[in-house]
Amino acid sequence: MKNNKTDLKTEFPTWVIIFSVYFLWWAVLSNFSTIPFAHLFLIIILTFHGSVQHEILHGHPTRYQGFNDLLAYPSLALWSPYLVYKSSHLKHHEDINLTIPNVDPESYFISKDEWDMLGGYRQKLAEFNMTLLGRLILGPFWYFIALKKEFMMSFKKVFSINFLIWFSHEVFIVMLLYFIWSFFNIHFLVYIGCAYMAQALTMLRSFYEHRPSSNPNHRSIIMHTSLPMRILFLNNSYHFVHHKNPNMSWHQIPREYKSNSEKYKQSNSYFLEKGYFTWFKKYLFKPVDKPKHPAF
Image 1 (spheres, helix red, strand yellow):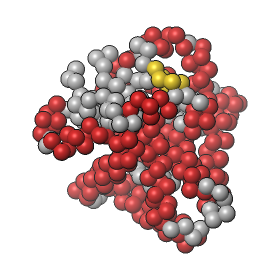
Image 2 (cartoon, rainbow, N blue to C red):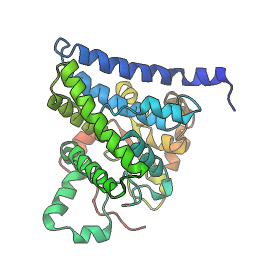
Image 3 (cartoon, rainbow, N blue to C red):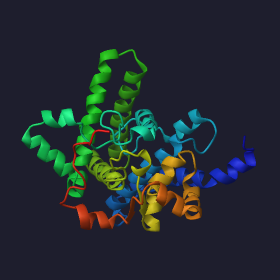
């Protein structure tokens, strides 16, 4: 087991980002009417908060996960209860099931049976969702609908932990939006709009970070992108490296990749991309893949 000095040295950058995201959120909201491009800053901060939550659920910055979860609990970006996100994301890390519909909770693919049951109009929508434009415009909406379905399903067992998580989340969101409106004088629709765009920005990162393949090692991408984007996503752009080292701190991942880059590239069959802008050039209007998942 690491000693406390090693923990502090390793996790200090994570403490910095946790403090920074909450401080910046408060600072931007407090000066929303005077800061140029305040809406853009808020979108970036809400996106960054999602990256911080992702880092925390993987066991940082302390060895006490219950305490870590408290640091990540506030759902500043509104969408998902943190504990629901944590549970589904850890299931997503079962690499053998990556991209498999109804098994991988973060898969954008549709099973053959479900695909055959869809009407022509819904198939077209699914194909549009596989374009970058469709993902950015409609992706957050579909995610919102899926979350609300989960919330409604939780009413089947009103005395369960699952219902308590969902109900407390909905209460928290209402209180948060009211607080932002009354204290910072920012209309709740403005904040919801920024949260929607933040979710779209997160979906830019996840647009094609996983592809179907019979070999699980070939399913996760390595994205070579700029330093600002790597910081925004806390190096989750090195997605294959993260999946192979899920508990490695975000600031250690670039060094790990640099030291073993050829090994990682060979292992994931050179599933690489050079910057998120290339997805705009390639897939803004063109589907990146077929929505119907090939059966393995």
